[in-house]
Length: 112
Length: 113
Image (cartoon, rainbow over all chains, first blue to last red; front, side, top):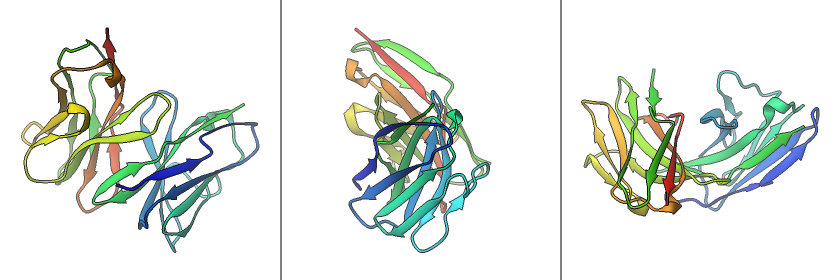
């Protein structure tokens, strides 16, 4: 299975600022996904990122708030823009291999 | 539309006892089924998956699950748990032919000494 890393692993940010989260995979993958896991909650899909095309956002998530880049088959970024305390969550990237999703370690974000 | 129900939000169990974590899903089409484990302050790790074939699936760390199509269930079992199994367990359903997963709300397994 793919080995996935994320940077940063955690951060504390001030409201109104933005944070860019990086996701690196050790092999080329077509589909990458970004999820949010709010405190004590399950995972919610934010968007799907395919290389060479615009990200596809789920209901309730918009590009202005969560811009995503996918410059190549092993890398993606998610930016959380104009943050508020409600954005405090774990953000996870995942990739699909063999009809299975594998997850990165997550980025723990606290917005003050 | 698909949905996943994990009825038990918390399951306390003594060390070396058996455990079953329940997962039921609803879907009108063929599905893939998954169990993931999340240890404190970590990401999700795949425990096991059902894509096709044998309905009894064995995973890592001694866990297994059985796909029951008639009852639309995919319960996770372990015959003897360890303290190190303390974690959050998520059941997920994926619709065949798509990439989207629906996750359950999770079950917190707490193994007691």
